[in-house]
Each structure stands twice: as C-alpha cells, then as structure tokens.
Image (cartoon, rainbow, N blue to C red; front, top):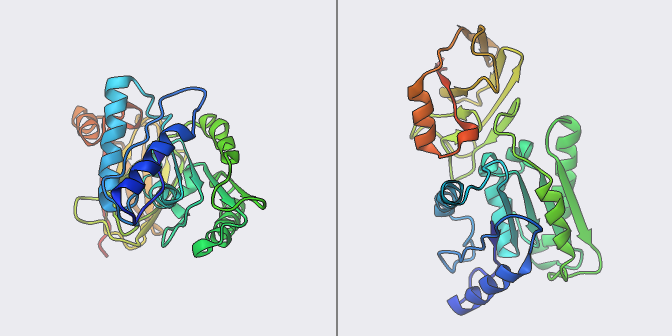
Length: 297
C-alpha cells in the first residue's frame, strides 16, 4: 500500500500527487496499491476512517487476489509519510514492514512498532516543520528501544545529506529491504500503545468493544506456557490464543501485574475460530481459544 503526498490542498493538487505515487515505486514482485486519499485535508492519511479503509482493502486483496496476509507492506511519501508514522504503530499487526519517506509524525508514538520492521528516509535539507530533525530523533529513539529490547524494533533510518524534500528516488532502496520481511502474527512479546484512534485487537490481545482508551499501553509476553501481562490499567483483556503461541494441550498460566489470574487448560472452540475470521479474514492470525480476563481491583 503506497500513500501519496499532498494534504491540505485543492483536489487537483492531490490528484496529481496520487498519479505521481502510482508511478513512483515498482517492486520486483507483488501488487502495488496506491489509493487516492478520501479527503483533501492536511491529515488525509491518518484520520480515523483510514484504518477501516485499509482493513477492508487488505481483506479484499487476501480474498480476491490471493495475497499472503503475512506479506502486506505500507509506505508513503510526504503527507503519505505522515500516514506511515501514524498508521504503522496502530496497525502494526497488519503489516510485514513499513517505510516512511519525507513525512512528519506529529503526535505518533513508535512503541507499537515492536514487531514491525520500520524504515525512515529523509532529506537532510528537508527542514520544513523540522522533518529532518524529527526523523533523526525517531531513528535514535528506535535504536534505544532496540537496545532495551533486542528482539524487537527492527529498523533502519537513512538521512540523505544532499537531498531536500525530494530524494530523487534514492529512497527506493526501501523496497528490497521491506519485501525480505514477513509478518509474525503470533509474536512472543507485544507492546500495544493506543493512539487517539483506538483499536480493539492487536496481535493476540483484544479488549471488549468500547473499552479501549487513547494513550493506554498494554504489554504482554509469552515464555513457554506462561503469559505475563502489564495491563496499563486496563480492566478487561481478552487473550486470543493458538497452538502457534502456546501448547493448548497443556496448562497455561497467566500473570497480570504480578498476580496470577489464571491457571488451567483452554479448550479449542469452533466459535472462537469463526469469530476471529468474522473480525478479519486473516487465516494466519486465527485464534482457536480465548481467555477473558477481568482485572478490576
């Protein structure tokens, strides 16, 4: 999925940017989808409806074109890069890798990128809105996150000192790096940081409808048969489980905020599979068992 630039401009300007984006990148394999943004606002690629649009877009291509849901990629230039900064952390469980070109993150947080390889490309002379400085800072932040959590935050940040906002196609080096990555829909560790546009499901974590809160952070990790959760104050969490994550024939133990909240076996159920597929036609992330935790204390 390749997002065009433009933004707060007349439709004809954004139409031109869209047509340019269609021609901008040509990977050696796969299908390039360059949508025209539904609006002409400055934040055209990170308004709340974009998440639903891309969910449906991915589903359509998985169902009708046989796209592998573990090999879906996100990229964008300028205002499209703004969208990558915002969408990649909040929809990280949908993508195998993401590349941001010449954008600005605004209020986005990189924490949700724990399991999503992320590239930054920026011209060193691209000083509008401090884009170059912010890109360098994000690269530094991702490096610090990687050092603290070596199993996550795979990234590459490239600042081209000779370029301004237009990078003359040098950013196309993102393509071979990205397509070498494959999504893991069942990572052993998750950092789920909600943005202002909340989601109910992230990898194998879920919260009930209407419970998600902007700014909330839930962390979860699996070691063997033990699941450890830092709830971030969430009072209800649903674990979406599969034999790809734990052995459902054996006892599973769950600790939340230092307290054991479950120990036992979980039954595989057709209903859970069906509900998972109704949420998303993504066979690789289908849960076969679930555990609803109430953490009110």
